[in-house]
Image (cartoon, rainbow, N blue to C red; front, side, top):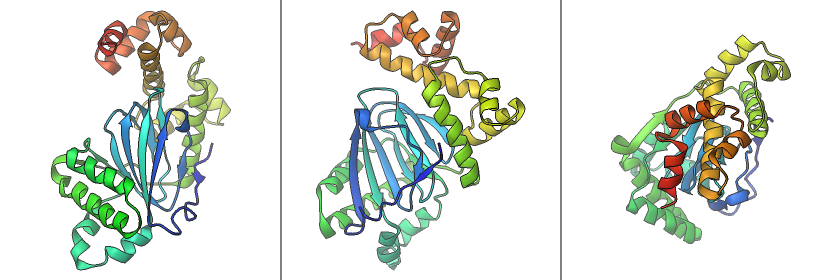
Length: 277
C-alpha cells in the first residue's frame, strides 16, 4: 500500500486548528501523509507506529509532533486504544508566528525534520490540550499557540529530536507496501524469501532496505508486532498462553517465551498476572 495523500483543506478551510478523537476499531493501519502538521497523543493503548518509515513501539502517554508531508500511521494492538489528534495548517504558522513574539516557537519548528518525540505530557500540557479540544474560533487558536509554547518550553528536559532517513516518497511507498503486507499476514508464517519474491527483491536487498527504513531487522519487527498482539490477548481473553502464541504466528513456545521476555521484561504469565490486578 502506498502512502496516501490526504487533502485536509476541507476540514481546515474555516478553522486553522482541528481536534479529532479515535478509539477502538476507528484506528486502522493506514499509512498516509498530508500538508498539515499533526500532534498525536495516546490517551490509552499500545502498539506500533510508523513515521517516515521509522518503526517504534508506543504506549500510554506517547506524545509526538509529526512534520508536514511525512507518511505516518499508528496501529494499536489493544482494543482499548484511544487517541487525540490535533491537526493544524501551515497558514497558522505563516500568519501568527512571523511576529517577533513567536520567534521562540519558530526556532523550534526549524528543528523539526521528521517528527519530535516528547515525554508524556504533564498536567499543565494535558489541561491546555483539553481546553484546545473544547474551544472554538479565535479562542481555540490562542489556546493552541499556548499549547505549542508550553510544549517547546520544556524542550531541553523532555524532547528527543528524531532525524531519520532522508524522506523519499518512492522508497516510503515501497516500505509501506511491505509493512502493510506484514500487518495483514503476521499471524501466518512469514519468511524473508517469500516477502522478497512478492516485492521483486533479493533477500539480501530486502534485509538492507528493511533495516534502513525501519531501523529494525525483519525478525525484530515481526516479533515486536506479534508480541504486542499477544499482550492484548493476554489482557482481554482467557485463552491459554500457548493458544495465544500459536494464533499470533509463533510456532515454538520456548522461542515465544524468550522473545516475550526480551520485549516486555517479564514472562507471559507474569504479564497476565500483573495486568489482571
